[in-house]
Structures are given as structure tokens and as C-alpha cells.
Length: 125
Image 1 (cartoon, one colour):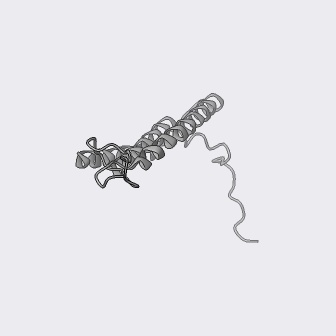
Image 2 (image 1 turned 90 degrees about the horizontal axis):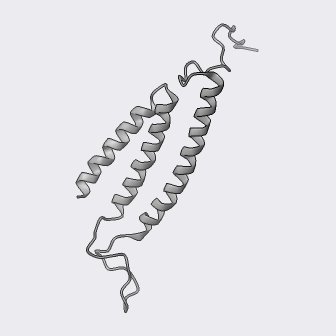
Image 3 (image 1 turned 90 degrees about the vertical axis):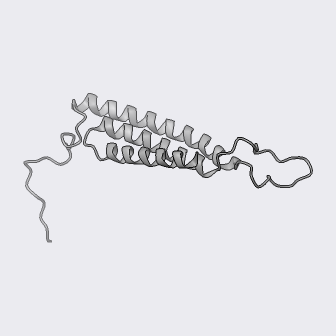
């Protein structure tokens, strides 16, 4: 089961990096969302995928049994989901406003701070 999840994590990371290297801001936004999901799945997989022994400390013991799932990655994933959703919402609004102002989602055409026809600044002083 963990081998299948490892392959899926690799595919998620591959697709996320491919989308992040795009010059269209919507694809970059989807790449960020996919990268967050890949990291969450990686954390979930490292916490052991066992359904037989729940992460509950039985009475008379001080620690979890050795075959139990680790509850810490699950708590980290819940926190990461909230943070990644808020980050995604911020980037979505930022992308939409940039599209409204500039009329394009191509990052090469968004370079208003770097005009093409301007002379280069002096190199030495």
C-alpha cells in the first residue's frame, strides 16, 4: 500500500513542478495547490498506514503500541490543509486582480516594472 502511495506522491510532485515552471499564472496556481497536496500525502504516508491498530493508548500502557499509526502526521496535515487553503485563496485573488489590471495571465507580459525599450542602467560607478 505504501509503495502505491509513494508512486502517487512522485507523480504529484512531478506534475506540480511541471505546472510551477509554466509562464501562465493560473497553471502556477494549480501547481501550488498540487504541491501542497503532495506534501500532505507524503506526511500521511510517513505516519504509517495501518487500520488494524488505532492510535489510542490502551489502559495500563504509557505509550502507543509499536504497530499503531502515528497521530502526529495526521494533526500536521489538518493544520497544513487550513494553511494551504488560505494561501491558495490569497493567490487566487492575487491572480484574478492581476488579470483584471493587466488583461493577461502570461507572466512574460506582466513585466510592467521591466520595460523592454528602456536603456540598461549603468554598470559601474
